[in-house]
Length: 236
Image 1 (tube, helix red, strand yellow):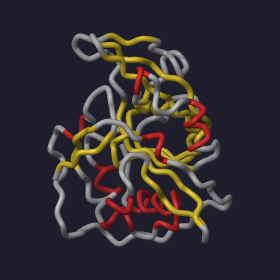
Image 2: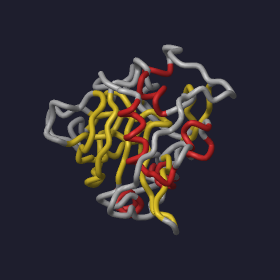
Image 3: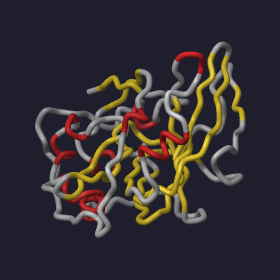
Image 4: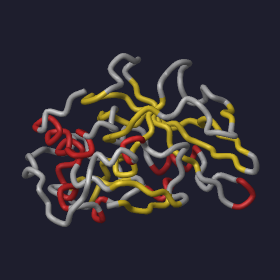
């Protein structure tokens, strides 16, 4: 099934238009593998900085399904290094701003192996009244502290502007030539502290609203999801 979510992006995630996955109300995913949260407890994060405008996407039934689909060409875990101002897509009467999240890579399942040990994730930065960003770089930095563990499922962000638009500050937030990764709406997950340990939270889609296979053993954190992807033998 498709779902509408409030985010903004340069282009629709390629895997969504291929019909590569379908959803159902019956969970057919393999049982979750046991994993452990990080030895260093995660800080509590605030995902409100990711809220934006409506966007339709295909719902994947499990992390393994999203990771294995053809349209998902980048799957990796790591630690958030920080946020920088990204490029701008300028169209008549509209400017779409972006933030770049720098990630120190820990485990790579698909893509991003030939770089500098970092991944650069492009995130929409919706604007509020007066074309002012709803969340600034400082807001992102406070909401998602450096060292936060993250799991990303995505694809390379478009390197060309959409028809009728143009890109401003094209290399902003990344080294020259570094590829930007655009996450799937279900595919940007952080480890966050709880009163009893840690859990997994989604940037754009709340994990508790995802299909059942996404909600298995959340207290195992990003480490638990990483173990599941290893068991599923996710590869390029």
